[in-house]
Image 1 (tube, rainbow, N blue to C red):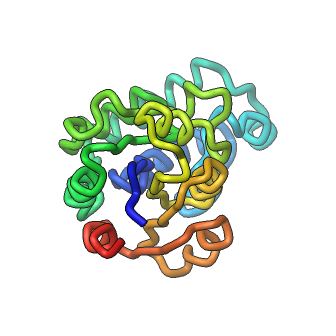
Image 2 (cartoon, rainbow, N blue to C red):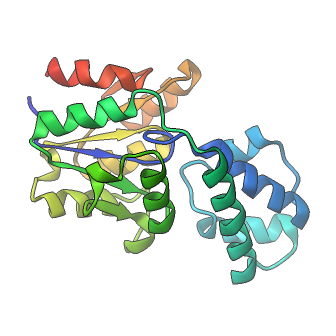
Length: 219
């Protein structure tokens, strides 16, 4: 079947942002009393929002998760992203192929806040493809793993979700895409991550974003 729309996650799919974001978070949590390695922080927080983990953070740090603390995190995160953010290799070509496949029916559906998503897409030169079609889980009744952000993106494009292809890289995101009724392909550069992505419902794994144009042509 041909897909009538392609919906991209952002962090880890289009931009290599997750180690930068989690690095800033790990450092701030360390200062607050919760010590862990970067790998442990990424393993726990990727695919989740910091605010959703309020209870755990407060229990591990012994301090309230205040708005001032969150603003400090956002400032440090944004500084790290502005300094070192890179596009995922092959992502630009993948987006262009998705546009050609669907006649321009693409969107970015992220669990992150809108400011972060728009900043990152602009920084790596992808905003031109997604302007007007960016959806944030922070603006939905529920964020991933709920399907709300993908359902909103599909509705905006006026494409039934069952005719959409979702590109994700986390089990939380795959679960959201499957719950929306879409077909989900998982970008999986690390083979050890594959079983969890398949268990979450991914229809296909691929190891490089550079593979996506060929995979779409094969449909």
